[in-house]
Image (cartoon, rainbow, N blue to C red):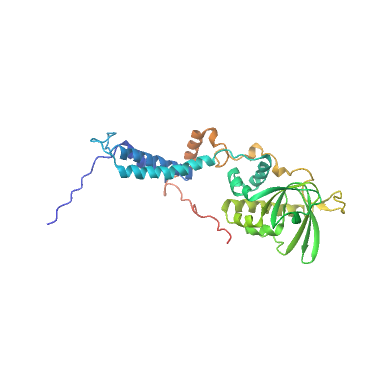
Length: 328
């Protein structure tokens, strides 16, 4: 005859155990990764306290006789390290990102067109390019080594396009991009694939340029690809807008009169200018740079805005893990 199994319901764990379970449960109730990491850090912290105090039962705070659950303490400490290091990195990402005046102007262009944060701009876009200056008369395609895409910050260029044996001349100014055919790397069809371009600086020229090899790397990232796609679409739309609304400029470099699309020389386009108050990112937006003005209040707002009850009390979020497939 088999011995009968008797199930004995024990006393609930001490307050440390209840707090740990509550924190672990709350990690599934937030939609923001920072709040999830914080909940896990707190959960492992209370679990470590529970193990270090000998797994006391309710309502005691310390077990008698006192002992330590060494395995629970070690695993909890490891959990605090893994989740805590990630949480600290998320906090550091919310610091104000310092940019030079020129870098800041370029970020304002990307932000207005794509909404990219200063941190993603600095780490994902800015490090892949270079600011370069060219004297009037310089042939940009000859001065540069290798194939590059340029964003014009200041100045004007004359671009001679040779496509299928037909040559035409256009002028580009602040806020415009060249060379066009390399912009197809971002899966936004621009055309000009069989077109060669010779670009000459008409004035003092300042550009931000990225090599094609770096563009190929950027095209595989989600945020950088979307930012560049937004800039490319804006550039194509601008070209279409000015296509039938061009103006004749005074001859530069001794050449004949030519057409211009964009701002006049020696100035920046308004898209590089300071942001108005209504253009600033909301203070609760990740990367806004305003988190550390009042971090406690910012965390409370984040907890409120990202709190989501489980199904069926709240509708499910579809595609949370999905991202656009990067180009191969």
